[in-house]
Image (cartoon, rainbow, N blue to C red; front, side, top):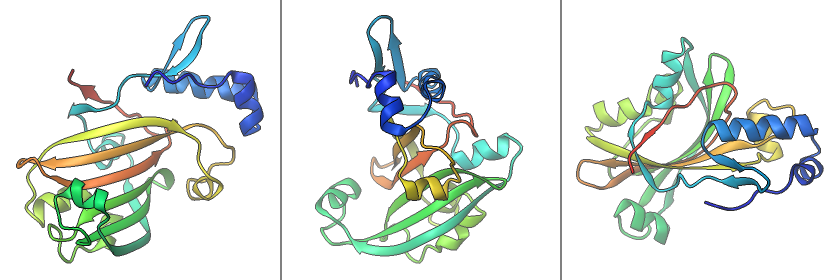
Length: 212
């Protein structure tokens, strides 16, 4: 938070896009509260990190509410030993199995997000990633694995997609997107799901209510 973004001319040169594209992207990030503009000073990353999300909808619910059909395509799914950071995050032993799912999410046939999902296997034994193609993961967590969700913490930062990410999201030009890191916490205060996602902001509208 507070980090100053490069000047518009620098962004144009770095990403090989027009000034109009850069200005539109900055305006979009400002409207989402991710970036703030200070007159005669420039654009800065807004101070919105590490706040608790108290009233929001999952992306699945947001897509349904918009009148579109949510779906996912699983790119990869595997189980890996927990790193020290993951063991601390999920309150599991070092090298305990962690399920990792990489998927692209759609609203109708339009890609809206890329997600890396991390789940402690001890809480979700035998989870079938293919169920996520047409079902809400949050609902699966609650109904199949009886997880009582208390809240979610999210961190939003502007980023630029890689060439591979652009291909998966069907983007024809490089432009800033929103990277979201999200932790879902159960009623016992334990993190039960961690997600790193890259979201396209001109397809879906995202609404968050934060407490101070």
